Image (cartoon, rainbow, N blue to C red; front, top):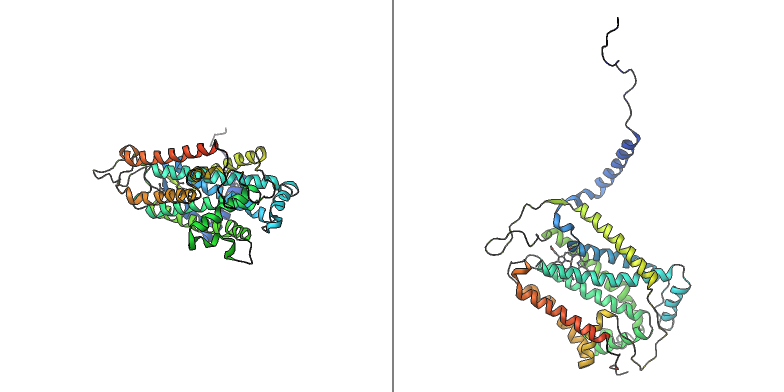
Length: 374
Ligand code: HEM
């Protein structure tokens, strides 16, 4: 008679882990080894859930545009010549003869537009959520400085193609430098007799301005880490309007980085499509003494001021805009961050945006006028 004494004891050796698990654990070993040396797991610190919203990811998306600009910029400098006699022809050479050159130039152009737009939207989010308030005023000013540098990068980039538009932009640059007196002497062709001003603007566009942006972006990121991302303004406040530390659910910062990477890939896709469908043009070499082009759209609003009051309008318009941005955290010092409870500041911001928009539209419908004393 046989009895069922349960399954027979196994005589085989202990079973080896399934190949998937082995692969995973080998991957884990490699990651752990890298982490031990580079401390990557320190990036897993918790950030509040709202930091993953699109509006709170705009700074990261701006940083993604910066990355695209640096890579495409490095490719472009291999073929661009900043020598005045060759500059315009070298841009044509890039788009017609260099393999992939038209696409790379297009991506560089559209990434610059994207960076400008996303930096403004990011500034808009910081403004609406009152994130420029204590203790983040210093980091806000770092942001204002970066916006100024991004504007400068777009301006210097426009000059580099050395066509009529670039030449007229330089003409404005030189005359505004004159208006600034001694401070503006760097912008004058006489500043360095032996080096053409185009070469100096090329150095500014490729080294000085991006170098400063990178240094400030690192500082900006370190200060975001130090102060932590601002709490959502809708979270409760005490009677003085100050937000107590809250128990908002958190996620590791590495999740946020993954989301930014995904946004960055999507942005690159859109920029790539624009680069193929709407590549930036390059005009014929410049003709002195005429003024027929419009500047890039981000400068249109100050050019309407120029039409009204002359070249000084560009200088005073830009200075007033940046002075308002710099003054904001010193004027609005209450701890209240919810937009509904800050009607005066919010109306002021809406008015500023409306003025810039109306001036921009006026430029779009006005033919270019002669201002330069060339
Ligand atoms: C131009 C390039 C810029 C880059 C690459 C950048 C990047 C970032 C990033 C990654 C963050 C983290 C949160 C987020 O994405 O919203 C951040 C936060 C912040 N940024 Fe920027 N930013 C730029 C420009 C600006 C500008 C123009 C301003 C304001 C004038 C500004 C002010 C701030 C402030 C105050 C914070 C802290 C916000 C908070 O804690 O809620 N940034 N920035």
